[in-house]
Image (cartoon, rainbow, N blue to C red; front, side, top):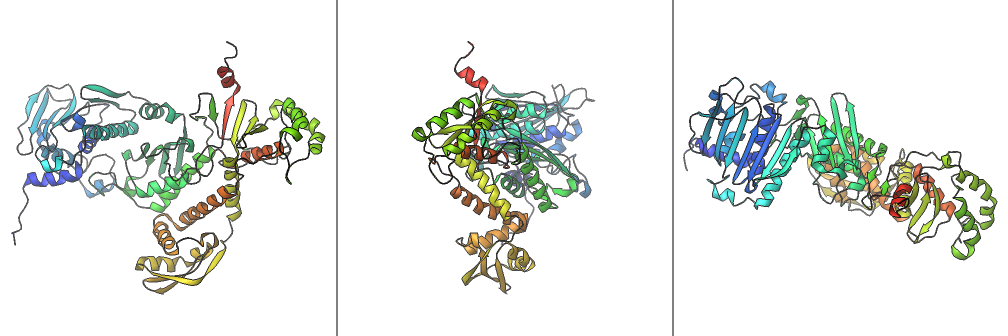
Length: 600
């Protein structure tokens, strides 16, 4: 057996680099974080061949003193922390003291810096094996890190790098993240000699627009919520702006970009009622929390974190986003034409003075409908108003329709288009409603309301289902038997590692019982019983609402259409169906005039 002996310093650094510097973007992130910690107000990034050939990062920060340059390239040398108390209350982005040492171990690195009190700048060079003594150099202020030929001395690792375009895309994403979190810093990015991005100092909304585009900014709802010493702010995109990938998801904790399972779950749950499972929400959110309540020293990349009270934080994030999505009144571009918009519907209570079942139409169309109903419209059926009753109310409805101030937000129905869409008019112009999507949302919310406060109906199993699981699951079930009974499950503990399921909620009776219980236990431990069980319930209710909603090609009467419009105005989140599709659009008179070139 070989003897135990210390590893050479170079090999130690190269091992560390495997975690810290996974690819050029990882090195770029670490260096920019150092620049931000150095109070830089301007950071310039220059890349060659996606950062593989060269990356040069220049800042105007406080700089590094001559006698500290060599220490900056030594592992675990840092100015950020010095005690355990510092480690438990980290406010800087960098703190491990590994980045520059790791980068210098797998590249040829030149470090040049000048502090304000120095006559001129000083420079050191390292190629992974040797380091030069500080030499005088030319630099105005701040620090320049120039790393060339990444992984040139580790060919086996370099072959795992992707194409130049892929590596550049990752580097570009790093710059965008840093630009989002620090709008008070000017960033520039050059690639192969060409300027790709220039982010000037701006406020947060202007910076978000510069990074993610005008369409994103026009489709968001703002968040600004506090609870105790937790503060979340930023923007979340409305469901109509959903994406096919997670490419526009940015979450920062104390100005640090993170990817966290708990946070992702809270956001996904907040969008669950309004977003299709195959789509992803977009957001830029900033969470400020006491540094003592979060552990960022989980992994060298510092993108994984742990929270002291994860369950409370999950609920806070969930309710903050849920509140913003429910209350948003921002107008967003729908993407059909520049004249079509969708809005959040102002609350329009059912007890409004206008009769919700018999609401007025515009005079001309209403009169023509009465005369042509029998021959031009199919109005048969048990729930269809008779022509006689319609005529009886003509005078009342006509007078209401002529009072423009009495138009409700979604207006009065004009008719149906191909049995799919309801056409209506309001004060602004034309309203187009997808009747199935709108009815689906209404039914879903009614089903949820009906279920709230009531125990779930339970369905006993003819043959109880028994299965083996680990001890922690069994203990958790024993401690929460009452919770399971409340929502329709009857569980029994047969042994320290065996559970039996004797009854399940009636609406889940066709589910895979063992898989369902395992999924529930895993999520309940992480996110809380009530949140997970509500989500499972809502999944079933959404399916029921979709199947029960009015289908396409069903002919509705004007009264039925108006009743649906009024229900939409009184229903929470009626702007989107359960899958995140918009339920209605508005085309303004100004937009219509522009399309038909009126006034020209």
